[in-house]
Each structure stands twice: as C-alpha cells, then as structure tokens.
Amino acid sequence: MAEEKKRLLTGLQPSGQLHIGNYFGALKPFLDVYDDYESFLCAVDYHALTTVRDPKQLSQNTLAIVRDYLAAGVDPKKATIFKQSDVSAHTELAWIFNCITPMAFLELAHAYKDAAGKGKEATAGLMTYPTLMAADIVLYDTDIVPVGEDQRQHIEYAREIVSKFNRAFGDTFKEPKELILKDVAVVPGTDGRKMSKSYGNTIPLFGTKDEITKAVMSIVTDSKGERPEYVYAIHKLVRRESELESVYENNKNNYKALKEALIEDLGQRFGPMCERRKNITDAQIIQILRDGGERAKAISEAKMKTVRARIGVEGNYYDIS
Image (cartoon, rainbow, N blue to C red; front, side, top):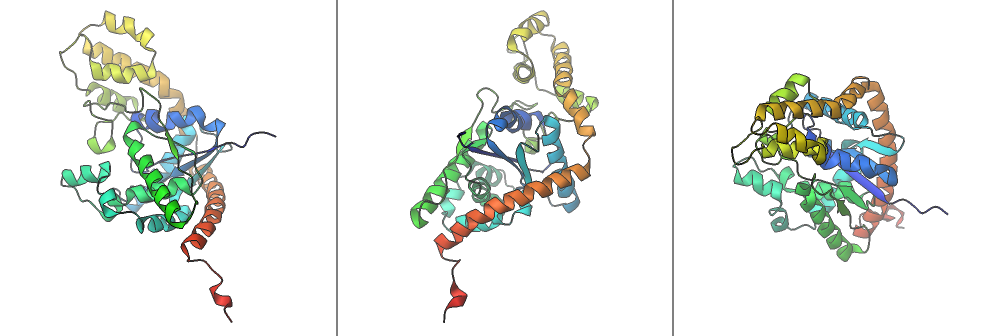
C-alpha cells in the first residue's frame, strides 16, 4: 500500500503585483516540493483587507495572483487552489482562536509591532492576523508550510495557538512545520532591505521590460567593494554563482553593466512564465477556484464539525424532550 502523502499549504496575499521576493520566498519553494505532497494553495483575500480598501482592486488582485500561480507552473490537477473567502470555516475558526489567544501574545507579532512603531493604523485585523493565518493552516491538517524566513514567526504562532487549543479542548489539530529554503528565504530589495511591497523596493515578477529595467537600475550601490552587493545578492538567485564569477570579474566597478546583465538574466528566467500568463483566461481561473473551493469546503467543514463539538457549540439541543 502506498504511503499517504503529507499535506502542504501555502498562501499569498492578493494585495498587489507579485515581485521576485514572493517567487523565491514562497512560490519557488512550493513549486519545488508540491508534487510530493497533497498540496493546497490559498488566495488569502481576507488577509489583504488589512491594506486593500478598494473592492474592485481586491477582486482583480485575486484573479491575478491565481494567474501568477498557474503561470509559474502550478498544475491545478495536482494542487487544490481556492479562495479564502469562499470557505467560511477560516473566519469561524479564527474567531475561536481569538477567544483563547492572549492580547499580549498578539502584540508581540512582528507585523503589528512594525505598524505600531511606524505610526501606521494598527487595526484589530492586523493584530489578529496570526490567528487567521493559524486557522488557514490547521483547518486542513497541514504538515508543511513553505514560507520566507520573515514569516517563520507566523508558523511558530500557529503552533502555539494549536497547542493552547489542544490543551484546553483535547487533541484536535496538528502542529505545522515551516519549510524554508536556505539562502533564498529573504530576498533583498532595491534598497537592501527585505523586498516588500510596503517598502516600495520590489522588482516585479511579471513586469514589463521597462518596469524591470527601472527597478533594477534603482538598486542601491556603494563603493565598499568591487561589486555591487545588492545586485549580486539578487543575481545569484537567477544564475549560478560559478557563472557569475567571470561576469563580475570582467566588470569590476562597472555597476551599470552588471545591472544590465541582471536585467537580461531576469528576462531569461521569467520570460517564459510571462508568456504563459498572457494565455490564462479569467474563465479558467474562476472554474479552478470553484473546483478548489468545493474541495476545501468539504475538508474544512469536516474539521469544524469536530471543533464545534469539542468547544460545545454543536450538539443535539433541539431533540430535548
């Protein structure tokens, strides 16, 4: 008898255009392993509400992110692709987790502390982001979650919340583990910080040649060495370091030439994906989401039946004589 596959889940926010940091931090780790697992991809549109206030934009972004998954090479026959908001169990379980998770614990989350420290609007949604993410993961008895290094804390929070629930109500959920690829988990942005839409320092994954050129040419350089370190840190993600040695040796201190080489290599790496993306229709995406949503709902509802019974909100109350 074949060994039952473990479950893997990943999700990306439809909060804007994907960048190469998203690809190397989440999409590529997923692509490298997803065929070895029973895999789930979730477009986490409720998470995106912490930053997106335009309903049309959110809808368009959701279609776009699924198109990106498919263009990157994900086979919808080998993975369940669905939309978070199509499965009401996510928010139901998040509320249950909210009721057992201390405020002081949530206040220590990196994303919340960062927003509060910068004077941004620190909403209740941002504070409880970790409990919704925990619900996203554990609803499906997920074993593995591929994430960037900067998201490790979310998986640690999920384990803590699961442990607290299991102690209170009985063994119900698995404690998930993170999958982080070394050396590519945190991708530097054009300013040297972690590549992030919130920093405005990204290189678009499916950008035009002009958009990619503009982003690469804006990468911060310095005169500490003979090569631009931020350029090189990105370059080695798309081309072997052994091949880059001669490129950087022959262009010492010629930062413009090295950036142009990076632009060319980015085009070679992601060009085929861009072509595939152009041929994926909205109708195809909607059907994939419908099919995936039905399967996700069936799995999550079976789990929630157990959860409701454990916490005492599901019972045969109406048959009392």
